[in-house]
Structure formats: structure tokens, C-alpha cells
Length: 159
Image 1 (cartoon, one colour):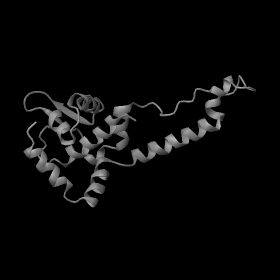
Image 2 (image 1 turned 90 degrees about the horizontal axis):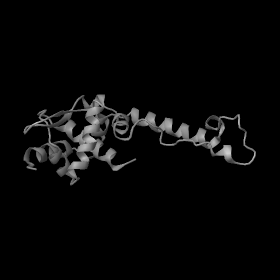
Image 3 (image 1 turned 90 degrees about the vertical axis):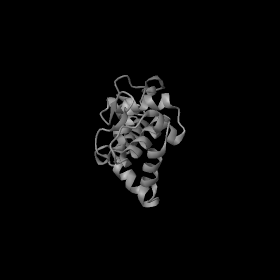
Image 4 (image 1 turned 180 degrees about the vertical axis):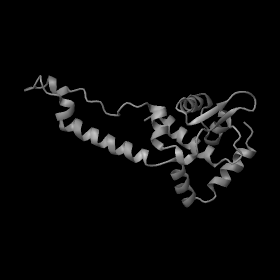
């Protein structure tokens, strides 16, 4: 998974904590974690295409959550950035091995393929079961001042 997933998730959490519903520029979102704005912007645009963020052009433009934090899953963000393809793709190398069966569908019968598909399904279920609001809740539990500190930073930031 590329670093854009982490950046996008943190951006969604921070946008969810902002109360005034004003769009936030890429520069401000990037400055919060000292990220490269151009690369972060690519990730944010992917979230717009997936319907997770909205984007407004112009001098007062920027990004906002398109849905409430409880309506955006971690899987939504991951698939917006990484795509929907499985992390593991069975190439059926058993077809090239000794005693290969040309009639076999090794994607279904190879134990490695089966284990990897099961793990992928469990991983996707876990990500689909966690929302941005859930992440916010856990952060707030461990660090109650995080939402207020985040709001204050964005109010005072000038990038």
C-alpha cells in the first residue's frame, strides 16, 4: 500500500474535525504533516472521484468531506487510493511445475491462493467495518485534545 493511503486517511480525519464546513486547501492540509502538496493533491483528487470529498475551485476553494465521517469507511479510502484489485494475484505458477494438471483451476485449488484470498477477505471486512468516525473516536479517547488542537491549527495556519 502506498503512503497516499495514510495521508488520505489522516486528511479525512482532520477534515471531519473541522466544524465550520469551509473548504481547506491542499497547501493547508499538506502543511499539517509537512507533506508534498502536489502529491497529496493527487490523493485528494482520487477521494473526490470516489465521492468521499468535494472540491471547490477558486481563491476560497479547497476540500471538504462529501459525507459524514460515520458514512466513510476506511475501505472506501483505501480503494479510492489503491483501486479495487486484490492485493494478491495468483499467477497459477503450479501450471509450470512438475505434475501440473492442465485442467486444474489453481486459483481455487492451490492452498497458497486460498489462504491469501481468505486473508484478503478478512482484511477488507475489517477495513469496511471501521469508519472515519470510529478512527476519530479512538484518537479522541487516547488524546481528547486532538480535535480542538486540529481545529485551532487550521484556523491559525497560513499556507
